[in-house]
Amino acid sequence: MNSKAASAIVLFLVVLASCAVRKSEPVKGTYFQPKNSTVARGEQLYMIHCQKCHPGGEAGLGPAINANPAPQFLKRFQVRHGLGVMPSFKPEEISRADLHAISKYMKQWKHY
Figure 1 (tube, rainbow, N blue to C red):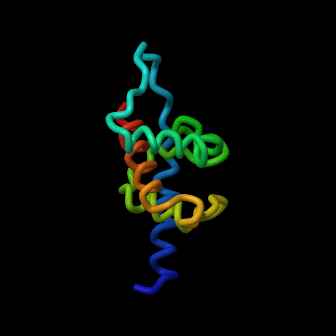
Figure 2: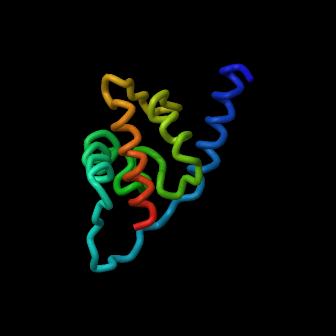
């Protein structure tokens, strides 16, 4: 499979997944508690790099990502390479370990 075909498939999946917008959960009276230091670091990095376009994982300047059923590796691919109006984040901006921490945070936050 060539890179154009792979990019087209990724773009299609992202567009398809962004069509469903999750509504905010009702207030539960509890606060999000990271399970470990990696998730806590992911939360900090998410707030720095992602929150302004995807507030709380909901739609903002960018589409909602909580409702996106794409696997985590595909979401990391999109962060690294960017698609559409989403910018790409190079390893100098977000390291591989930090990208995985953001991914773990997003996964835990989605189930919160």
